[in-house]
Length: 239
Image (cartoon, rainbow, N blue to C red; front, side):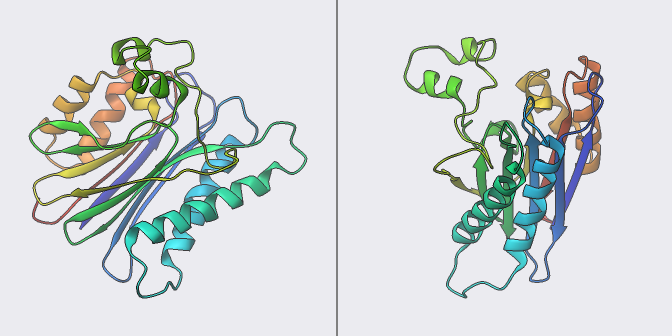
């Protein structure tokens, strides 16, 4: 298993409120995590870093043998949620963060998501795996606006779920085979300024995961780098 993570402050922000981590676990699994601290809320950088580290702690702790990857990730997300909620002491506004993670064993990735950071699958094309947990996505699903209208909607960054702020956390879970391709996890610092067809072309042209990550961050910064931009990538040795 091969993974790569990289984060960049962008061109217009003074602080990086994104966080990421990827690692090979002792049992051979790979864990890749990306988080985006919520702008306009206190402790954004602390919230994203706390969520990533608490998730890693939960996934790597001893667990019941019959727990599958979905249960492991959901428990980790809830632990991250509790840890970020604890940061709210003394704050007028609650800290929060998005969180997307992939736990990979053999050639199968189990993906968990809260918020609007995304996971994509890349083989001969780019396909979005996760669905944004946002108010605009709810409008799209209700047929009230089109996907094209969603990108320019004034509520495009209003989340319906976030780690640390949700009253009743809803963790979305997905399964994706990596036998023929690889995963891209990213914050909206990439997907907002860079069109998906450009992301696809960059991924397909890259000669390695590290090259893909470097080039994607360059793409975002070439378009003004309006936000922090973070990518996490993972593939099997044979893909």
